[in-house]
Amino acid sequence: MNTFVLQLQLELDRIPIRNLGRDDRIISSHGKETRHPFLSLSVVSFLAGLPVHLKLDPRLDIGIGDKMLLRLAARKVGLVEASMRKKRAMQFGSHSARMEGGEVDRRGDSMIKSMPDSYV
Image (cartoon, rainbow, N blue to C red; front, top):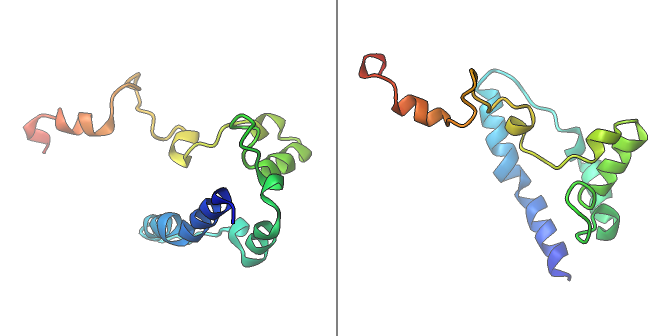
């Protein structure tokens, strides 16, 4: 089997532990429950059965050659600009990781370390 296909399978096999486990712990700590419609068994089985060349083309740039089926679906429903964006983690895509008040170059932990002892 192609090394690339084996790596994709490894990534798919890790989703429940690596990503969903972490996400479920964080979300359930707030009394909420997640839904993952694209991870339903029927969707995953269908997509896993498709040849890799229909899902990605590593020769193309990121934002074009990756997630090709999802990008095509987005274009078909009119989300042309969104279909060409690079993948970003949710906290960066939503800009929730950005600091307020013009402090975009400061990290959150540097603010904590620089707080006066009276606040700690």
